[in-house]
Length: 313
Image 1 (cartoon, helix red, strand yellow):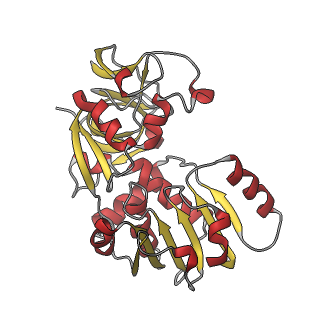
Image 2 (cartoon, rainbow, N blue to C red; image 1 turned 90 degrees about the vertical axis):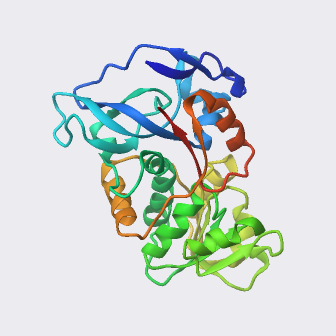
């Protein structure tokens, strides 16, 4: 099969399209013909060696976590899927989706939303699961709470705004001037243009501040966080880890960071939001697999609106 592999860590130039062996599935896995994937920051951070403590130096590696495609083979222990099913889901770390075929555990996949293309479906798993698990599991979001999403037009942020609204919150989105209309269209109750207004200097206090782009420190946000509010980051920096540990044992405000845990139950919930019109995808650009390096470079630029899709012929 064709796949984009890396044989060392480095810039986008280390991504090479090659012919490699198809993956052999385990008893609880599906072999999926990949129609589409997407780019997440974790993909290029892995490529650059920023997660080498986890990935080590075993090459070649095929990156990519998000998959949408068609089941072509099932393991003997698989009960929920059959050959021909259209699915979307996640590969296991460190990836494997940037290829014509990918092996996916049954518990990391679910039927593709009926009203989405493969490319649209492939932009959902990692980013939307991150948003859902941050708000629901870490933030313990409740009906009527005030929630602020920093980075509301980014890959995680677009889903966080919509999920928070679906869960009954009053949502404020923070983004740049050029994305104000987009975030409004996601049903945010209020949108703040960070180029003209610093939300940390405002008079409104929030139950949850979700920093979906990891750009504003807890120390900056705490005065606009309610006394028992929760600050959540997508980046487990040493500072965030220490603050999270300390606030765990103290009354008052809490600091937490989200590490997405893929599972079929949450994917089913996201599928329901999509099919009932409570959530939609936003694709900034779509690249063919052969241009994955360009897609990574665009993602690294930090100006992506929504998600970047990778289409396979």
